[in-house]
Amino acid sequence: MLILMGAEAAVAASRIKDIVDVEGVRENQLIGYGLVVGLQGTGDSLNNSPFTKQSLQAMLERLGVNVRDSTMRTANTAAVMVTAKLPAFAAQGTAIDVSVSALGDAKNLQGGQLLVTPLMGADGEVYAIAQGAIAVGGFDIQGEAAKISRGVPTQGRISNGAVIERELQFKLADLGTVRLSLRNPDFTTSRRIALAINDLYGSPVAEPTDPSTVRLSMPPKFRGNIVDLLTDVEQLIVEPDLPAKVVVDEATGIIVMGQEVRVSTVAVAQGNLTVMITENPQVSQPQPFANGQTVVTPQTQIQVADGKEHQLAVVRSGVTLQELVDGLNALGLGPRDLISILQAIKAAGALQADVEVM
Image (cartoon, rainbow, N blue to C red; front, side, top):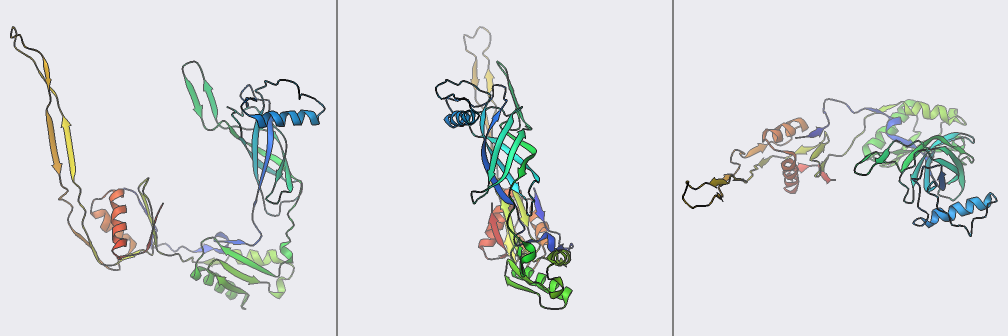
């Protein structure tokens, strides 16, 4: 049985830095299409991957090699998709990591070299150029009658494999107001953040506009120096408030309860009908000279258990999370039964929490 729970004795106080994001300070996704060469016969088959053949022809033509009327049978090239994350405020010339994934029927990218690949953002502009040797963590080895594989050999990574060529046009210092976005939206949490900031500066510079946003106006002494302002704000300690929720994963039997979960007085009984069938065939051997035959006679044993040991239990009103868990565990139930009981208590209106099934 596995039950994860929030300990009520612990105060979930956190820094503002750990529960909010600052407007404009975020990563951006980049994507590109390229070719990997230098594979040891584990690349795309050009007949099954026409896009690889077209890309290879176009690349060679740009380098002055005409192969339009030639039959290419190389298996040392693979078409790949290249992805990366453009960090916030990344300067031109900064190196970032890239991930490389096979697009065709290549079997392994180990030993491959990614050729120059432009990486574009959602606006279609090129922000970085990627190139380099691919590091593959998995492998795939096979012989005539055996095969060993580990990881995913058709996916790899290039450390510092891309160079940023274009910077994002975002000036944080020019903002007159800054919005703090809560990662877990909540009315109470946003108000507590605003109160903590206002107490720090002694003036109403922060205002909660909705459950997920706190608008922070620039105090006069921080004009043009927003970094100092955000540094002070990020270190403030607040206690986030979250709604009562029970999350269950029926596939694995995991139950997660928040510390605010409460239950009204309710009686719970659970019983299982278990039927066990055991087959124990016997061999019937005839006596000597009896002209009989040896036969197998079936013998079946059936046992029925109706789960009478599970009695009716009462869960009192207003119990704490620890008492609720102890009460359910006292019934001797497994995770599957606990999930069904929690859903039944919720249906009866006695569970003061949302039940989310993953």
